[in-house]
Image 1 (cartoon, rainbow, N blue to C red):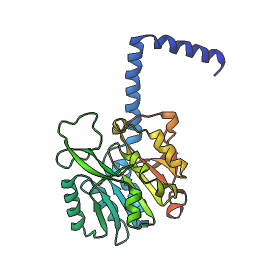
Image 2: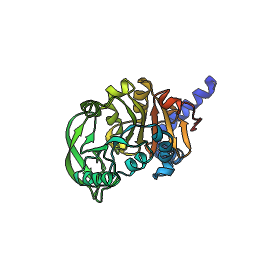
Image 3: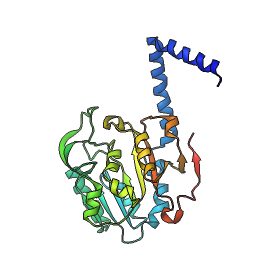
Length: 279
């Protein structure tokens, strides 16, 4: 782009910026832009539509130990463990007491004696915090509720750091860490920095959505954090992994799943997978 065109665009932007009507129109266009990106990158919420089923089939047979943060009633844990070599071992974090009871029952029924339930929310610090629990073990229960949920029941729950819990159990390495913390995902990563910095977690799957706004987190920061520690970050879709330039597309705060993995993990299995551009 030559200097004349750049100057013309700059002048046009300044003129439009002085117009309240034009600015409101731009906001509407940006909202639609975010919706389009969400439709492009997100897929559906089911395991098959989100890519979680595809990923589990790929790495679970090569996994010995997993961690499920935001396990809820255990649907992901049961799906992943069923594809692991026997006997599966892992940790499942669920902060709500009633949901944790149901989770323990589900794991016991499935014969997963090597899977321990921790009744706490994984976070960047230890302590306690308010938790907004939706009725019927709602999957969008969260530590963040700046957009009040009328059906949510506010309770105090325990917070813990993954680094502390894993070290306490003398767990040397994790094959897969799955995070579905309704906006708190990045802070879960911060609480696992010792394991992440030493790349003792082979693969991390985390969810990105509108709840990140309430949490004050960004995908840009999460990707930079993981890449700084030597991880390759990819968008996860139903048919595989995609390269996404977050700096180019910006924050869109719509449901998507991302995968971060250590190069060479699982015998280089993920390195050899086709990785297509998302845009």
